[in-house]
Length: 301
Image (cartoon, rainbow, N blue to C red; front, side, top):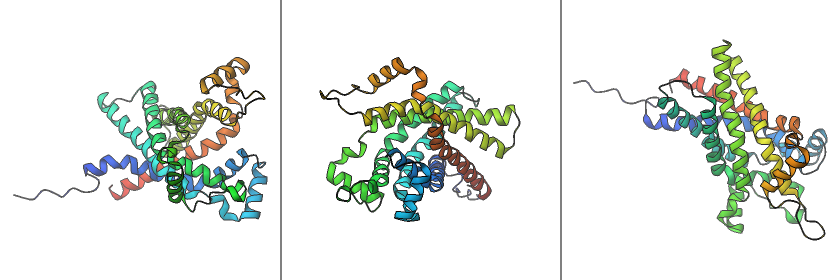
């Protein structure tokens, strides 16, 4: 009796299980390598150091070109956790849902629900790396005596755990998770829906479909997450008045007061700038993911 063929990596159940997570993490990390300088300048702008051109020139002149990549290790670790978890879980949950739906495409509402779930999973897993990234990027803006001088992402996580306790790694995780759920609902659901539209309804080729769907995904990721980001920013920067009273008692109170005073569009203050921050990384992630999947098909993975 002939021996059965040994299982290859492509047919292995283990590889089939981890493949969506590996691909998601790799695409997010590659996108971060491209976008990191833009993100670094963005953080400095948020800290009040001037316009994008002024910040970039000052950083290169005073700190060297390498300063644009400060915090890259934390950014890569964030993608290795956050994007691995969110894209991997989204694809796994989507595949399960399609099987339950007899192979038919899922309705947009179901895709949105899966995107919300994947966003919550990803943000919960990636929150420690996100905290390390923000601290490393902002460190050079602090007075010398107050700088933490983390050597890399793992050193940052070690120091935070040793100095502040393990639970401090999830400091501010609540608003981060809610924002990530909204962002991923817009990003993930709109991408799959757009691929179906561009490919099946318009008959576009593979490259045009991926680029077009990536652009749509980046726009909706920004549109869905900005209201939550706006509220989070207002809460983080509020100061007490002379009597010690804060303007908002919490996120819900901030949202209600904002809606009452400025209407729904108030939540979209600064949308063009925010979209420029969010959309490029979303687009690069999808484009890299598509190329990774093409390569794997070529080599039989």
